[in-house]
Length: 330
Image 1: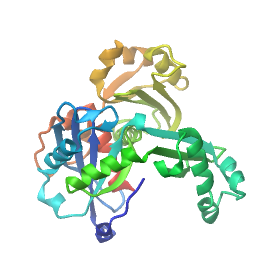
Image 2: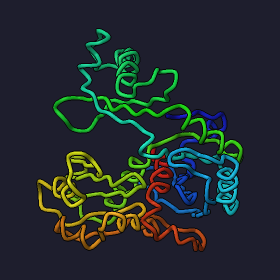
Image 3: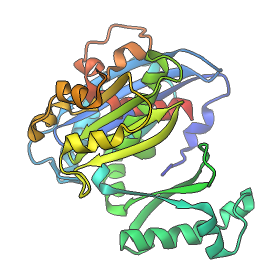
Image 4: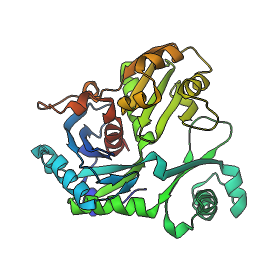
């Protein structure tokens, strides 16, 4: 779900890219701003981090109940931006709650057959749009004009090519665009919370774990726990709890870890929510049989100036950091 902005044309090849990740949570707005030169293997820098509490009633589940309150929090979060960020084109991405986003994976051949195309070339892929929209209408139970949809052909190693489709009710998207615009922020992308957190953890794994070391990535959000098993940088398993197939969180975790012995699990999100299901980090380590490392973005980039926001050391920073990464890496 990407929105083009005219000022993005000013970003020149080889220049330093600046990107902001905005996580509007149930109790706070979290902001992480990073920068990176577009040349290969350039170092990542964390330019800014900020946490602004949201008052009671600002959010109602996945709905933004008080748009003015969220806009004020966004303005406050951006108020301390260093001059270097303020004078560059800043790509801003915001997260959508996991429960407000529908994601499905469909074999490419099935969609291609619906529209009579081969599905393995650029012009054929463009012809898939009607089939994608029909599939979204079917799984969402809403007409396409009420949905915002993003889709792409999954290029990960697999004998069967597939298409990943993400959709949300347009009202969720429009509410966030409006709040950002009121705060003077132009959004360039919207992403789902779990996908942003996973991007952050995979980046952390690439810097903190041994190459080819299998690991589990876990993200805890207000609507549950999401987990992925990663082997050789490929996703080979995933889970979500609560779900009908799992009796409890321990059962979901055991189902996730079938395969190579794990040395490590990365944990992100609102870890305090584990208390609500009677679990702890030590319990996760016991079930998985490996060390659990809480996500911390402070060690993942250099800093040109002193940054003091506790968010730098909190697992809850993963969504905002993952959104910012999208802006400099894509």
